[in-house]
Image 1: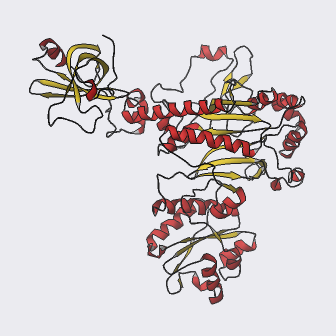
Image 2 (image 1 turned 90 degrees about the vertical axis):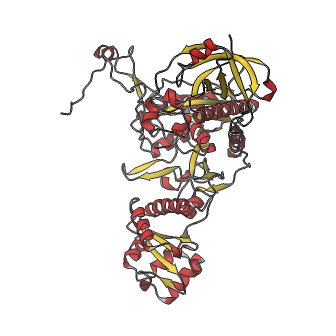
Length: 588
């Protein structure tokens, strides 16, 4: 016997056909001696029937079948009896009366249900991932991801891009996150790094004259994990020579539309654009969710004229005050507002002031504002009767932006201010090239150091790095960053100036990036690129926020795999071969 159809194929048109199906026992029912089994494969379910009046020997064999047994059955397709049709199954009008049965493998009782309605804990799912992946929902996600991969490849190939693999064992270079390192057996004391991205190599491909490159690149980063992060993930990575920002945006929009189409979603292109400065002022974030309003209102000057000493002090020190007007929010209870106050403190805000507008402004802080200032607040915030005004102030604008942005997102979710099925894509442009890092007390790249400065601000590189604007851009979907790109530095002199602005000495630059600087000496073309977080985009297209749901074998939050037990120890003999030894203090 050899399979003729999958378990999701059979329809009324197959009635009378002799078929062979392979699959797993999904459910088993014994109705008065006649055994009914739903046989499952990745394409669906078919009901197969073992009737002793048709074949007694096959029926006796079927009496011992259990859940997840692997079967091959041969029989003829017939209509289900009247009243037995299952409209919830695409094969629900027919069944297979079995003439022959082959048990390909038996199964112990599985530790988890192969049932989308009975999903166990995450840790159990990861331990028995090969069983979890049998669930129709998980197989559907992997199928969508496959279709999305093929769609991206097809579109990029049509646009003249070459798919080229870059190395997995690379030189250790600083790129933001920690590298995973691989000791070299044949080069004692030296290590390879696993690539956080193909950044330097795709730039070198442009120097090589490839013109247009892409890759479904595996990236590895040793960083703290969240629902949208994994130690290893895939990105749609591309680079283009002689291209400007508009060229990159057009390509990415077309690829994104194709990927979304693979998930059954139709989106409108081109995407709207917003500068980093505007995004921060309106939403306090460089990845705003634009499915709802609650845009920030700057009330710094008004609060600076008040008698509210704590806030006035922050303003006098160069701080800011931002407000959110929650329309109709006066019905929100004081208990709920107190929870908002505790919430913003998580993000280092000292507190949250509030006012409700009924016939007049009401709250415990209104007394600090004279009638004229209260009138200014109402006019500035466009407040109407029944509105709730929320304020955060701090001498550090970053704290205000972060706290208010998180509060805005919470309000949007709690108050159900947006349609969860809507997809709002947005380009964020004109980022600063550098950001001040309080931990190391110096400027660090906002994206990466290979980003070309805007020619109008490059003059500030040596004197005021914070004023330099980068020719870079992020793609955002519903408040989630999907990917980043930029016009790249292609001249050695500019790259060296950027490195010096980061306090990288000539010796360090030569040691870590000498091969790139050397390549730039030989006619590197202008080039630009982008990388989409592929797992993240596929997950969001399916309405999922945890990228583990679209990765076949992900790690848990401790970067471990409960299924195979990695990371694991290796014998001392293997460590010796790579010139290492354990130096771990055992905890008692």
